[in-house]
Length: 425
Image 1: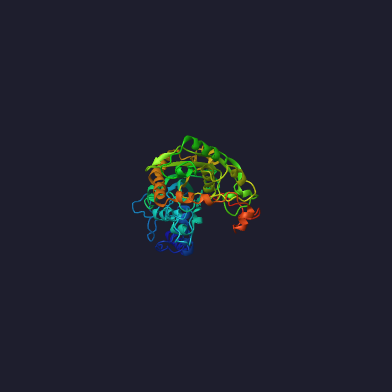
Image 2 (image 1 turned 60 degrees about the vertical axis):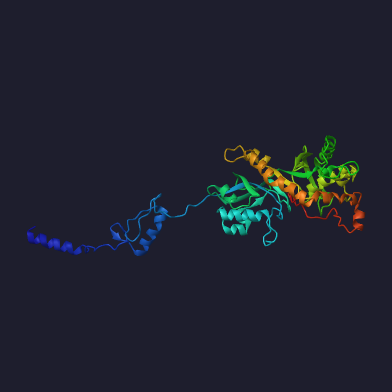
């Protein structure tokens, strides 16, 4: 083919080719040499976060690398289920459990929740509704009752130096002494096998009404201590404690409680006044049960009631059991034996035994709980005033006698069903 023919052929072929495209608009990627529709391009941009794509587009800033100095995104804190070991002096508080909407009745949980929010462990709305953090207390202590080993379970953000930050927002008479991770479904009330309480009282409470001095010069003799311990040991085992609480009938299953141990320790002096500590360990306790258990033994030792009243109080008839003052009652320890057997050695969770915190617990009792009991007893004489009511107490009252005086006598069908681990002593 000559030159003119070749030129004609090239012109014919050139006429069939598309025009050369102009410059591509920024931000619109191409696919297979073609411009992409704007909507499709936007869709591809959305896929960057999902697919990890990186585009060098002028209108989008380059993706910041992990660890970049200008990265300002907040770090997401882990939310975990934990338990807190608490100690507190209950004087001036209306018990442990929070009463939402009743600000005039200050509770231990009011101060605790406020500290958790201020420390940054929980969001503020969790403080308004404690169910949002799965909060559960092991025991509900009553007005004025202290604790050296209370345990609560909840979900929190595991911030750095969490214990120090919580305690920095708590008064000195409320301390968080320990923290442990637990399983996600852990419930401090339901998983608790037993609770140990102590009751601290001046020993003149055991002075016999006819033979001993009835003041602070009294000293507990070894013979009287043996009598006290013999009577306290009678509580061990399973009994119906319907006469040791209110609104319970003798045949109600929830009135039957199992006591593992109960005894009185050796007496000791505090500011010239002799005290003794009674310890009781049981699976669970009802409202006022421990105070009435102590009150009845005191009445027997002092000579105001016969020993036979103990057996009678577990029977079906009504017995008016005296209730000792709440001042000396302290929740000392809660026990999680079954949980520890199952999870304590699995390599993932710690056993809930608090052995390393025992020194802190003992120090808190010596610094805050015992001095409060001693000073309050000296100032208010709560035990002496209560002892003055025993001479007029009728321990032989039957259901008929109680009915004549207008006292409500719970029938076998009366009372709240199974308040279970009430522990409101």
